[in-house]
Length: 213
Image 1 (cartoon, rainbow, N blue to C red):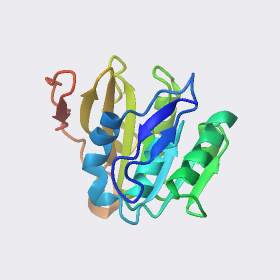
Image 2 (cartoon, rainbow, N blue to C red):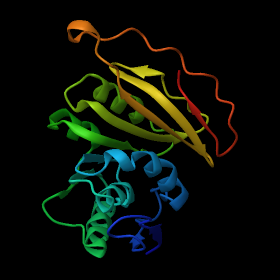
Image 3 (cartoon, rainbow, N blue to C red):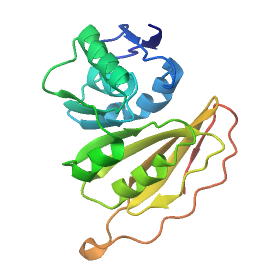
């Protein structure tokens, strides 16, 4: 079975992870660095949701860095078994690491939040990305301080906002883009605040980053 790289920081640092094989995109080390470098301050004690989990590399990295729990959602039975094996390899398994062999849409319909960090990494071009952002933006699954990290193909631009979610920043890494969202700040009386300024045009290169606003 092919490998999915290694855990790059935390209690399981250096441990190699298995990869489910065809149909699942590898979670390369530089992708983890692009995502988790900015998440480190919010991970200790966080409740994490890893959607389209694949090998589980994203959620496992979060647990290694101090997340309190992670729910892995992956409908493919083989991939779900790989997640369980990777949790065993990293010694991060247990009640705080839950693997759900379900469709992401069905899981979200009955999920109980709030989650502090949500990782969204469907196959490139999968229309499910927009549906997941819509569901997360409807409220109930996130805290005001939550972070949603979406990974997608660089040609497939994501919306600047989806419900209560607003785009904060983007970073291109290879053929993919990591887009970070957060809940829109509430205005007076708990109502949504004013529309955020539109994101600046992306000017970065193949491994560049831009801030929204």
